Image (cartoon, rainbow, N blue to C red):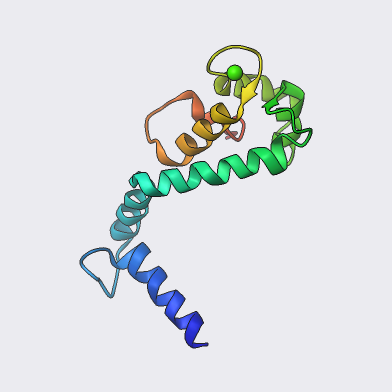
Length: 131
Ligand SMILES: [Ca+2]
């Protein structure tokens, strides 16, 4: 239990209290601190490592070192994306236009999806948003 409480306190300090060590947070604090975390280069590099793992263990299940459109269709299918919605996402991630998604293209798009607030093609990483 002490370990759990220690982890929760560390999580609070890192995620919510901020450098000011707040004991209460508002919705504005919540949003600001969340954005702060996603802007940190160390966080983004950690995310990049995880996207490499997702690529190797899940998306590139054949181990070719790249994804075909069919591979990406199967990956997005895990998130319920219809196959007809995949081509625009595939094209958005294939930044060099060689018809394949490399591990770096995949990881760059994944990190940008979570960490970049600009309106970029990487917003298509998990398929198109549906209203
Ligand atoms: Ca490519």
